Length: 229
Image (tube, rainbow, N blue to C red; front, side, top):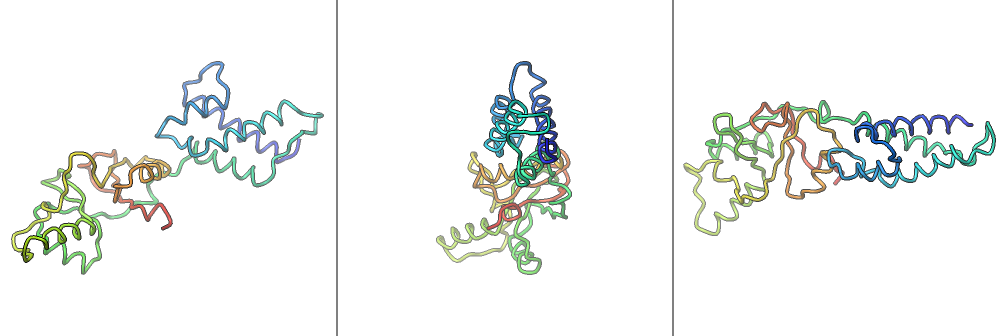
């Protein structure tokens, strides 16, 4: 058996062991069945690699069960496939977490901050997201898009007057969807990708130690941080 096949099978065996572990070591369940079962788990990136894993399983069976001789296999994986299975193994068994990649200082603001002050910060510091709090309790996320929407609505009424207008007015409450989400520092980057993909309303995902909205902010992730636009 060639070196590529040895590397391929070793990686396959580690993935299979991980699949079994995630399913609490079921009896009489094959590799493909475990893959399909775990595709329903949104906290795991198995569905992302479902087709790859099912095809990899077929090749593994050909290598193991259709050997022509002791040192000759009917199918030898090429380097691309070896690299592919190792990449999948890494993402399944050792997924990249949101920290340290997306760790950064994030400034929170009291909801009573004036809209004038927000505009000054936008102009001077080029901030585009403003997490709002009420004495430490998270209230909502204001973005430049929300600012623009608010100004558009106000312009239809009369001359816009900013005196005594606060950021609290910019929070949109519809009771159904919000433009933010919170995750813990131990969340996998692949989970962030899924969240943005499944929810087009999200403007940002905020990171705290345990995903508590009222915890200290450790970072923030925007769609453009994940996807190449």
